Length: 119
Image (cartoon, rainbow, N blue to C red):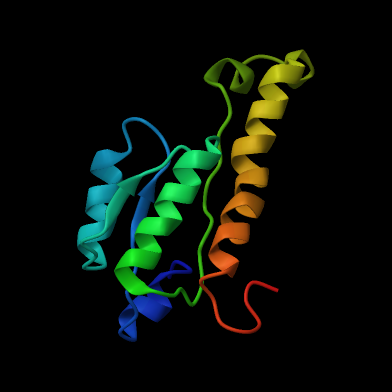
């Protein structure tokens, strides 16, 4: 069971965020499986898009109980060959999208959460 499935099966509402090109089919399938009508594209490397995304969530629901961050990315070229040949730029991009994006999203989600979340 995915992290989002428990709350959804207990009546929670969820939205699906698409973080990469070509994810529309997967995102739509996930949204359908959890009966979510809120599917939005989002480049988590763009702060303005993150701001807009959470503004839409606030306009729709007013508050959030939790977020699930399940995003990872690396340039395809960095996933082949020897790891030690990964460029600094490719490493920074992978870290930004895969890890820092959680901080960026949590920062925006925090103001939509009640006491105690996140952290």
